[in-house]
Image 1 (tube, rainbow, N blue to C red):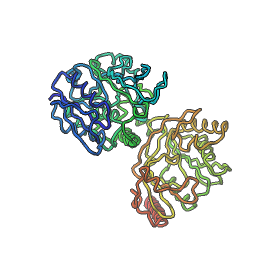
Image 2 (spheres, rainbow, N blue to C red; image 1 turned 90 degrees about the vertical axis):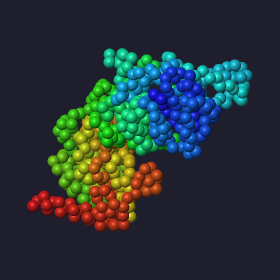
Image 3 (cartoon, rainbow, N blue to C red; image 1 turned 45 degrees about the horizontal axis):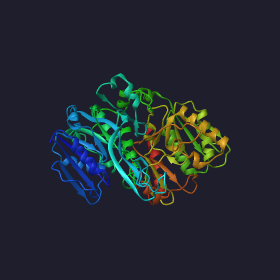
Image 4 (cartoon, helix red, strand yellow; image 1 turned 60 degrees about the horizontal axis):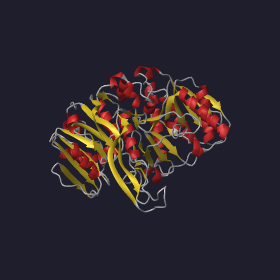
Length: 548
């Protein structure tokens, strides 16, 4: 065979129709390898020498299914497609004729008109959607027929796509207006992931589908990033097409099985590509943005030399309720880690730390917002690190240089410690005390936020706590990104904290990891006091060594 078409399918009601359509339209030496992931197809697949079925009684996931089908293939090319698609006549030979070795090729995409519903009592019909429970034209509530069309909607064409600053799929019709996009073969930044083709050997050179993403989600971003960052290309072939059915209306016309893994895939994808962690890449993600610039949602990245030249400062905020032993250790380490940085401290009581601003305020989120804003107004630094009285920062946290002036960056290498027990938890979450950004974007955010609160009152559920953590109606919220410092910083949790103490069971369920030995720090469990004393002695030894 020249081409193996790989179809991972779970609870797909139109799998048989998709396979039937492929068999009708292939014109080359093409086979179909389908993974029946947790169920037998209903209606069943007709026997055909070109069709191979792999059955799993328990689902293994879309990525694992794609990899399994690819391992069974011996063809020169592989094409992955969804189980609810229609195809152009001869699409296989049209794709094979154009697919260079270092290309990933996608056909032009149309939306698929799969079926209409017809009321068998009055004849009224309407466009595809969930199984009806009543007719809008008569009193029929039980007797409906699904009429299959299975043809492309020629007025719903998509050639060009991208991913946004969150690495989520977006359409990009504007790219098609550029001169370089006018030919039958054109570059595209990304795609939806429903249909793509490449040389089988190249697929394995790129590592196949990365199953660490989880079962489902971000496949278009993964394949496009691998294609471009490996030195190859992602191309759209306008000489042929496929048509894809979009299930967006919920019910039995929504996602065909419970799927809670999308957020995991997005977190993993974001960390992998934004932090340039893919071991096979020879280009950084910024290369793609530069290659297609201007890209919506993607400002031109700051050069590395400009990042390093930006002046840095810290905004330290406190309500003076933290245990003094901890707060003193935090400030001493900040002075050591941020030697040469501008320091602005904003406190409820006078404090001998940098330029001190005293604000007599009640404890609360609104007061913290005011303190941070006051610190930002008094700072002259270009880049600021927000710091808090109960976080023992690791020096690697301050090595980060924000690559974009309009984005908020959160360090997710965060370890929370329950002071009474010393139990430590590595966890993924956004907290203002781990936020780094250019001062101007933070200044504008807090200015608008405080004006909104002044006008409408303070509602914690509406505005949240971490900037960028949620959209706020009535104001601009900057995009957020994450980074991971070499070693975690220590977020102390005790009864004196304003923020809620740790719920280890809940945080562990959200992806947190209980640890005894904290990377870069040591063991805290059952010995929190000794742990803090060890940090202080280590700092003192460093000071003595530096003096010598």
